[in-house]
Length: 171
Image (cartoon, rainbow, N blue to C red; front, side, top):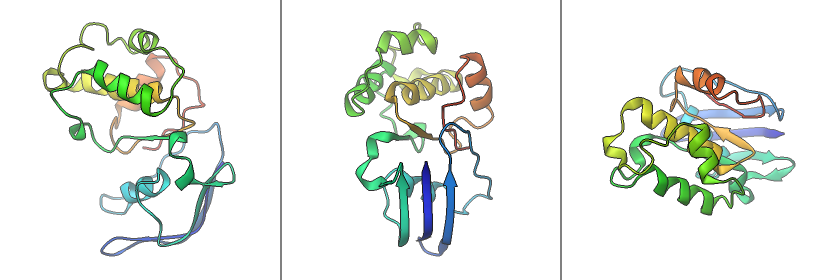
């Protein structure tokens, strides 16, 4: 379970103040709020990229800052080096997250065969979305945090690949 207990987060302004919520394992949750409301900041705190001002975020009763490998969060496809290939990033994610999954299986599942060895700068929007989804799967993380990366495509991609409801999608 992902648990927020009396969490307060601020940037230039207060983003969250004394928020408590428990996200149960095995469910898909959506965080709906206007642009600039702090969704990205919240995801950065959950994934351990930013520290909360007050309160505690825990996953399975342990502080999240000690569990970065249990989360996979990619803020924006544009952060990826456009000169690297999808294969390069699959290898990086496999190594960093110590995934036991086989790269070849992820390529097959996500239908990346025809372009996985091509530089990302040559990818269409749809190809980038497939790569992003593949990177999430490759991580084999317990919790996936998705921040507008796939938008409306998230549901159709998960249906296309018949992914079960153990994926934690945050849209």
